[in-house]
View 1: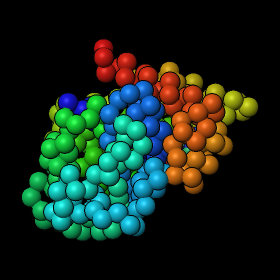
View 2 (view 1 turned 60 degrees about the vertical axis):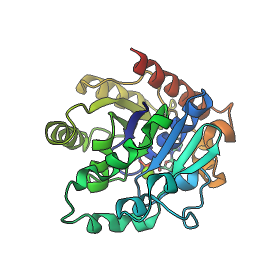
View 3 (view 1 turned 180 degrees about the vertical axis):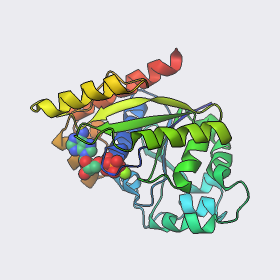
View 4 (view 1 turned 90 degrees about the vertical axis):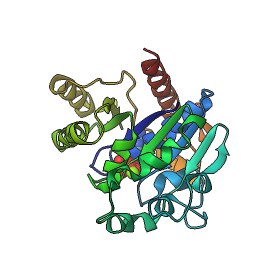
Length: 255
Ligand code: ADP
Ligand code: MG
């Protein structure tokens, strides 16, 4: 049964999508069967994995409104061991469509359960908001992985995120865990990055991944070629770090 990890942080630009794409692809590169599930209407995970978000027949929105079966929405074998459940801007209307729908917090969970056995990992990219889409990701997931950007306001909003996760645990998904925090865009040339890491370590009781993702231009370039980093530039520092993160994630599940 696949382990379901949602990549969440309501702050934009902290590296959620970059982490979702490259963790998915690195896990696939390590021989795991992976589904990358895009819950963000921006569809950056979708296009970053080379799926044409405007041309796919079905996407997460069709799933939510009951227009298609989940099997009809999955793009198979986009890369070796990696399937993609795409999204696009249509998904931004989902919030409205869900008004008054019974059990709307569990729509995605119910669908994903049908195909969970086909995968070792299901990685969900969340939108930059604590919206009904994020709640759906949190009810579906076994755990939440929180990317934290190494910048001055790193901790801002984190308590709100943790509070939301606690509410979901209390009311909707009692077995939900916080997988851990991963630092992104670490710049070894500045003291600031180091200070942020130290500060978060001092103030946060959550698990913190040993792997720190460096700021690496190749990570920013790869999506415009529709390629994950381990295929775009396998020798880059970005690729090596996401591979180490994937190994840590696998190891953590085995404990
Ligand atoms: P989010 O999904 O949280 O909004 P993204 O993953 O889209 O964040 O990242 C925001 C921007 O920063 C993107 O342009 C992305 O290419 C870039 N970026 C993310 N991680 C890195 C990194 N480690 N090094 C360099 N650029 C990065
Ligand atoms: Mg994103």
